[in-house]
Amino acid sequence: KTVGILISGRGSNMMALVEAGIPVALVASDKPDAAGLGWARGRGIATFALSPKGIGKAAYEAQLDAALREAGCEVIALAGYMRLLSDAFVARWRDRIVNIHPSLLPKYKGLDTHARAITAGDAVAGCSVHIVTEELDGGALLGQAEVPVLAGDTPDTLAARVLAAEHRLYPQILKEFVTR
Ligand code: GRF
Image 1 (tube, rainbow, N blue to C red):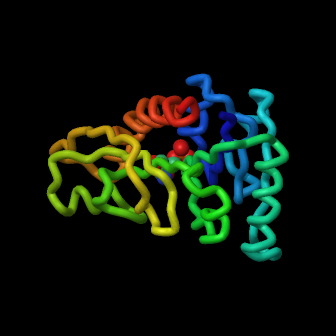
Image 2: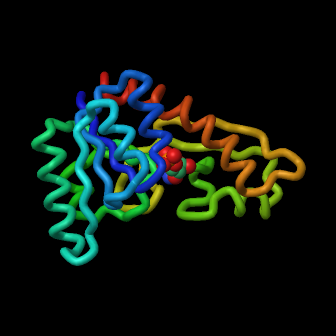
């Protein structure tokens, strides 16, 4: 199955997916200046960039949906996409949207996962790949990877360790998902 990747920024997970040979038909962003877009274009991958600002969420999502369908995408992979998809959008792509989240779900849904893991005194942190449903970071888990939390970790040092695990986990899980 062909994948559309949604990003909002750096796009390092998107790069890991492309480099792993996942068939990516479109990289789309809600932030027209997202750094990952230039990288994708440089790889000859079609891109779509549109901000919902000014046009509203419904019009934005309608254009995003059309771009994904026109590119032939059958699966959507969220990779640092920092916007909530509407219930209607999720319903149109039911069980065909996956996300990577930087915590061991169901722990630490939402933002600031690494600071919360450190504050809680957790010895283990990690990342999760899951199906996207209407509930934020709440859909069925497809896979997880663990990393240790080390003495002296800051949210940044822990984030870097988790991100390296994300770059291994996401391509592995998505490969299984698109071929099943
Ligand atoms: C990753 O940690 C991802 O899990 C989270 O946001 C970060 C995005 O990084 N949702 P990148 O844009 O893939 O480099």
